[in-house]
Length: 402
Length: 215
Image (cartoon, rainbow over all chains, first blue to last red; front, side):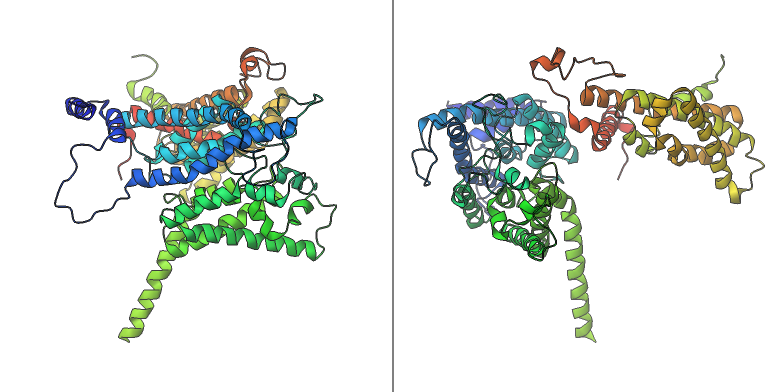
């Protein structure tokens, strides 16, 4: 008798007991259960929830790997151990030293995110007596990618518990949540521990510990430097596109995010409408700000000048708007469901993101706030799109019958 | 039988738990969010509301047969306003710092839905003794929630209780702070008070499933 048969026998034995859901979750994660339908179904689809989730995780793996190398690379560049990488495949970036430093910082984030999140999911499944839901698989992967690399692990654990319980389980679990759980976790961290989530000391590992010393590490992001009217700092447009810049763990490489976006769009998991309209919204807000600057209403003495003066298309490559558009805004549960609604929803996310980015005095980025805000409005948008459609059809019917 | 009959005891005890004005009737939420960042103002607020609602209920109950029903809301407002001004003046005279901290919220007791709600629902139809018990009971129920929320928000948000640094000093890194603990800034913000009230409602309803509404 193999392990598979053993697990099946155990499952039958524990059927109906309290811990059964927790056991089943591990069982189905490892093996196909015995009691599947073998004939007689007429609709067959390969993309069940688990496979959809796995596809998203797969599209995130390049970002995670890049994030690991980048965490080490940023540290080594600041300490002067490596010179700046010039091309994407440069050995200054993809080397063992970068990997070990990065992995030592990033992998604990992944482990804590998954560990704590899945424990909460298991506890709720046992209390509610239903099967463990797969929802946390993607959230657990997203969370380490959207936090600064030096965030203390206990803060991350508290935030994960908060995000999963208040953001998801109180509404009824996976598929019922109003807010994106990963962004709820980030928002919690941002408001609870702002000193660990913003400023110029958190984006490169070790920057906090070296404050005031002669070999102090500066971890300013490009947005931070722009917000202080200091231009792009030391970073070129190419660095930004390839991702050799300080920032949250997994959102720096625009190139790999675009690769991930293509995987999601081609496998029809992510909505291209949302991604496209988010970018369109960001571009239009950028154009408006450019217009304001060109008209001379905002001069260099203004504290908003640095960010307003950014050429509109460059907004897409600064900060996390691309990551938000591809991985966060497209979350099928919290986004709008109707096609027309998706255009409106995405456009407003992009529009508001750039607006908050420019005007937020404390923290020059607004993607996560904009997406959470629009999560709340997504059902309203859908409602009016539906109403509009019903009215249009009623009118058509009247015309025909009249 | 002691001072209180069985029915009277229920008037006081029911609002504390199964008929709580905040968690069950969902009244008086605004002030529960606004002034519970610390424990001390929460307690002062609770005491003020006990005074206003207890006395107000008695006054309205005494006048219940002579108030023309068309203008009863105005009469009720005058009664609350008078009592609130008394509280406000007493605080200004004897606890000036606190009254500054509570600022407009003492004045806004007038608009606390619990008070008008009890006047309308109870004092207009019952005798003064019963109305007094009902008023004190409901104000106590309100105060209990305020104190629970204030306790958690001050402890987790500022690391203090009544201003005492129970978790150690966050600047000099003593106590819990020495091992890397930090205050949760979210706790000090009003949205977190809403979430704490929500969690209390959640716990209460999962302990007593009779409270869950059908839909």
